[in-house]
Image (cartoon, rainbow, N blue to C red; front, side, top):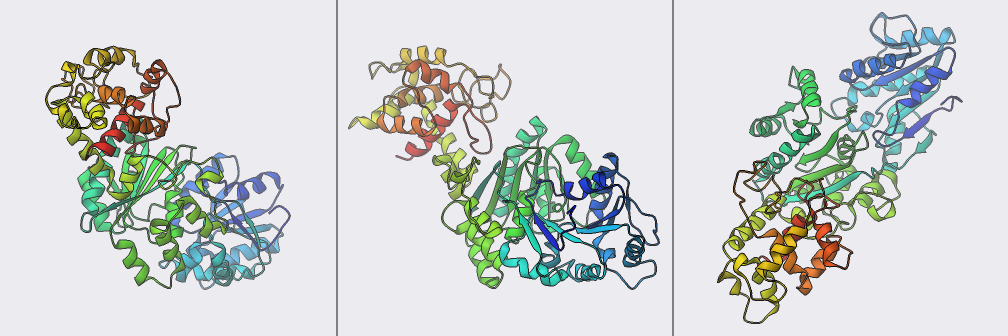
Length: 529
């Protein structure tokens, strides 16, 4: 950019520092003006403020403005206008005649060919080519197969392209399914569980809906803010959400230019409009380096219908392949956006649901985590009135599969080395690692157990989790589950210490103790036997 290379197209991932490309020249160059064209008026005020706070002279261009600044920000709907008096092209031409116009930078340039609402206005940006100065196009999403559309839309043929991988290593990608007609109901269940966790930690989540009506209905059910183009006080709602955390429900109006730290959860209710839209919106999370869960919730049959209806739209086809195609989701995404596919295993990335391991991820993909929890809860209710030790160990002994119903856990003496007394001694060895909120008595997460955080409440599922994880080490398939959960030790002492630590990955969007995770997976895998 400093050398005047033109036309220049720079593709960097969301949060990759594109704004530095027009801020740094304004600092190192002694004089001259850098023009920055921004697609949405709502983004201008924030951008101007950020640049001014960096100690750089910056103004927003409005009709009739003639004064220069190191950075001049202009709305895209005004930048290409040549018909009105005091138009921007005339202003830029004046700067050029004085030798001050260094370059024109168009931010979020992919909107030139992807935004149906803005396309007529953005088409006028090709008038900027009348200016004899370098032109630079910035975006986070420009699939190589669509470069020609960009070049034709703004007349930048034979451009130089500089690309960085758009892979976001701190984002885990998930797809969850629900039955037809149950999309909103399932979304409410999933969001309610996540909402309390986000609020507690003052973290943020964005739930994207495809219509204003759906957006409002979901927000009402969650009792949280919503954001779409028809909301008059959306700026105030945005600020409240930023301060309090939790979930905000939005349409794609809350997309381009959103640059806030603390967003750790992105949920799309329904198949996103396209892969470019999804990359932009899922990329809103993790701007401060946080780990992010990006989940797409879709109804069975929804993707197939969209692919048939939009069979000629390569961007929609890419989104459909991401959801129903085989293999690593990160690789499917990067193969389209970057041409070179990069899987979760090719870099130090958080694992997508295809590359993760364990039954909980599989169930989230197939049924939704709400159904998985219902199955766990049902089995824990049964074991509460029976013997969890015999339920685990009895499956290895012919004829004893149902013996667990004949007595309760704390009366068990059926198996040497795994009696009620042995379980009680083992329970005392398990210590809370201090990073999770588990009941010290039953080891069920306080978010799920009736005790919540009140030690005076009775445990909802006493003598289930610890007896199950203890008995599992004497059951062949149980040992395999424990290993899949990440335990690599050899002694019972090491095992007891490990159980009290926080699990390495989230389950159902939350961090549990290793004890809770082992119990969950055993109850799910063997609970229907």
